[in-house]
Image: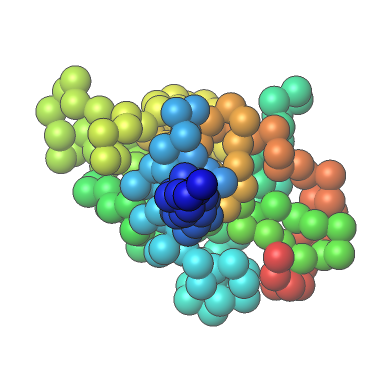
Length: 191
């Protein structure tokens, strides 16, 4: 009796096809789809995984490690001052890099923040226009605020640390400021 090896061949082909598919992004949304914005941010900021590169390129510390009472943290923000007056947002040019201080004194890049000063936005756009980045509206932070800044719009993108609350949420429960005392030596190392 002749047995066809066709079913075994098809099974092997299917298994090989599945194995060769690219792995799902660790930063996929709730539908399992990777965000083009996250991929753009990761591509543009990969060199800043080493905080010393960011510091050498003119990024300056803007905040200590920012944490919430029960909602996780944001981390230590470094900003590139010339970008703070930009009105047009570009997913490859964030205004802030966000680092988490680690126990060994290193700083680990976890995300970025896009920032537009409300006064700069208002000077170039009639109300009720709100800044958006690739279809995502920025959040308005009025003044006074906990940062001591004038009113601004912001959007976080957690491109380097998965956030259970969402890729664009303000607070990330996977980020902590437990090692904040070590962040004083911001150039101490990389992730």
